[in-house]
Image (cartoon, rainbow, N blue to C red; front, top):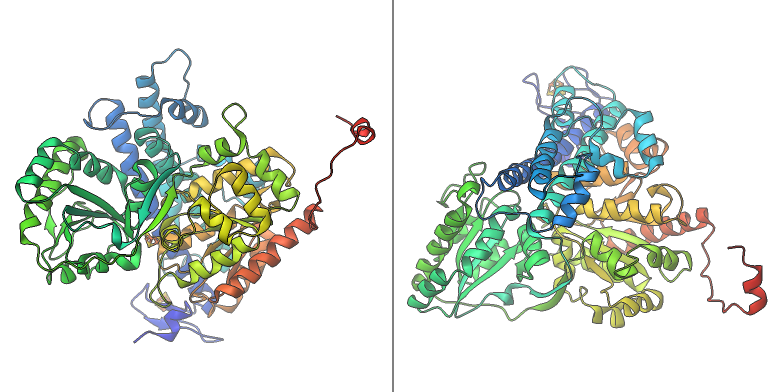
Length: 606
Ligand code: SF4
Ligand code: MSK
C-alpha cells in the first residue's frame, strides 16, 4: 500500500523522533513544517540523482586517466579533436604538448572537479554569460561536484536548514554540478574515449533478439563495460566458441541507457527500455543479462530463475542476490569482457522454449551536439544558424527536450509517445535521451521518414531539407548535458535572446521515476528551461514549497516546474510556454517567406 503522505512529499524519517507525517499546519516532532519536509525530500532526491550521474562520471574520468597514462589496456583516445577542444574548455594548456600529455592533464583536471572545494566548476563557463551571472548573484555556481551533494546531506540533517527556498537553492547548486559538471564530464570524456557519435541506423524493440545466436543483453549505464563487451563479442575466439555450441553468432542488444550509449557509437540494437528488462528475459532467448549500475530491478534475478538466463553482476558498487558475479576490472577490461561473453556463450545450450516477439522498428541515433551543428550548418560552417532562423521564421515553434524513464503508474511508453506525436505535429523540434528516446524509437518516430508522416508542415520542411528525423536521439541520461550545450549554442548563435530562458524551449520528464530525473529537471530549470513532469506532483503537500517550485522559482531562475500527468495537457502547457517566449521575442506570428527585389536589397543595412 502506498502512503498518501509520501506521495505528497511530506513524510520524514531523518531522525528517530519520527517518522513524522506532516500536513497543513501540523508539524513534525521537531517542529518541521510541511514545506521544510518537502524541500528536504526534494533536495535529497537531487543529491541522490546528482551522485549517481557524477559517480558514473568519476569512474569514466579515472579510466580516462588510466588510458591516457597507458595503464588501462583496451581503452585509448579515439577523438583527438574533441580532446583538444575539451582541454581548452577545462583551461588545460595544449600548446607544444603531445596528445598523450594533454590527455593526462585533461584526465587529472576532470577528476579534480569532483573534489574541488573553491571557485567554479569549469564547464559552468559554457553557459551563456547572463545565466552565469544569475547563478553568481544567487550564489549557486557549484564549487565542486561532490561538495554540493555533501552539503545537501548536511543541510537536510535534523535541525539544520529549515528554509525551503534556501534548501531549493542548494538543490539548484548540486543539480548544476550534475548537469554542467558530472554529467558533462561523463559525456565529453566518453566521446573522447569512444568517439563522438554521428548518425547511425539501427533497430529497436524485443524483436532485435535472435533465435539462432547467443543473445547478450547489456543493461545499466556505464559504457566502460558495454564498449568492451561489444569488442569481445566480435573476437574470433568468442565467435568460434559460439559456433562450437551451435550458435550462428553473438548478438549484443541493450536495455536502458547502456543501450543508448552503444547505439549512439556502434549502432548496436536496443532490446527495450526500463520496463522491458524482465520482458527480455521472458523471451527465453537471453543467455546473459549483463548489468552494472542504476535502473536494474531487484526482481531481475528472481525472474531469471524461471529461465536459463544468467544475470551477470559486474560492478562492485552494486551486488545483486541471485546474480552471477563476474566483476569488471577497467585495468584488465578486455579479459573481463571476454570472461563475461564466454559465460553467456557457454549458457547457450541450456536454452529452453524461445518466444521472441516480432516487434521491431528502424531507428536513427547518434545526434550529439556536434552532429546536429554539422548537419544543420555543413562541414565548413557548422552552426545552429539554420535552426535559429527556422525558429524565428516560425517553421519551428520551439524545441522540447523529452527525457527520462518509464513508470508503471502509466501504460508503458504511452505518455511519451502521445505527447511527442502531438509536439511534432505542431512543429516542435524534439530532442530526446534515456528511456523516452527508446519509447519513441519503438513507435517509429526516430526516422527521417516519420517526418513525412507525423511532423507538422514547418518541421517537415526543415527535416526534409537536412535529412533529419523530427525526433532526435541524443543519447543516455548523462547526455542530457548535450542538450544543455545545444541550448547554450542556440543563444550564442543569436536572434533568440541572450539567455537560455529567452529561447522557446521546454523540458519534459513525462514518465519519470528516478532521483536522477529530479536532478535533471532541476538543472534544466536552473539553466532557464521550463520543466514539466508527469506522474505524481511529489512535493505538493508542502504548499509553500510547491508554490515556490511551480511559480516563485521563476523570479530566481527565470524558469519553473509544472506537474501534469496527462500528455495532452502537458502538450498544452508546452505550447503555451513556447508561444509566450516567442511573443517576448517578437516572433509570435509565422513569418512568410519574402523574395527580396532589388529595391528591398538596396535598403538592407549590412
Ligand atoms: Fe520528525 Fe523532525 Fe525527525 Fe523529521 S527531523 S523525523 S520531522 S522529528
Ligand atoms: S535508464 S534513469 S529509467 S531514463 Fe537512464 Fe531510463 Fe530513467 Fe533509468
